[in-house]
Amino acid sequence: MSTPEGEYYTAERWQNWLDRLDEESVDLEDEDSARLRLNLQDDAVIAVAKIVSGYEEGDLEQEAALEELAGVRDIVLSDIEGQFEDEDTVMLVDAVQTSLVCVFYAAEEYVAGGPVEEGTVEAYVEAAVDAEDEEDLDAALGYCAQAGTLIIDGHDLDMAVAEDIEYGLVAEWVNGLDSLYEAMRDPEVVEEEDDE
Image (cartoon, rainbow, N blue to C red; front, side, top):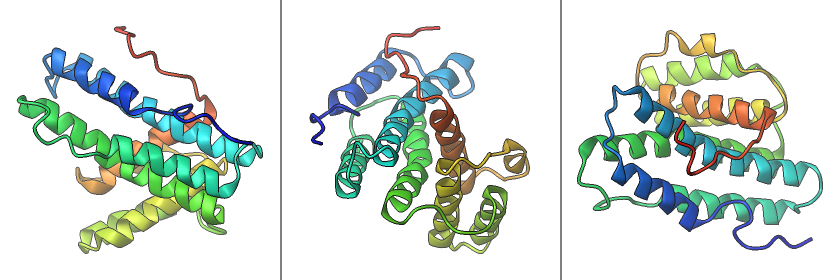
């Protein structure tokens, strides 16, 4: 079954979010900016969840699902250098992109080989924290992605596990996993023009 191009996510959709960020004054301490960041992130994660669900339901072959994921990944992880003059806006988009890296790895790993066979979401997150402490970021990302495969498979994510994580890459990746958890449970589209 062929999927029309752009059914899951488009470059135009991502650019609309970036344009909106550019129009608004982003303040990293502000609640409205935090909500906008979450909407930007969730919008992309929902596309990922729909692709994975399409694969699980047999609407997408494995290769097609991986191609769709790669397409969305290429859009949302594209270089934004020079797009924004405001440093807070750059930092916000960078944080979103960092969080999404783990989501894409998890989804691709799940489609390519299914969920990891043992362990819990929390155990993998804790292993990622330990790996980050040892400055082994590749291993940390791998553990977070494995946690993500379990989330896609229906395991719960208890965000209490994130409470003691110091700010860094693993904290951002777990933030992405939280979006993935919510999207797998309720993949509702985030309205681009939703101001509330």
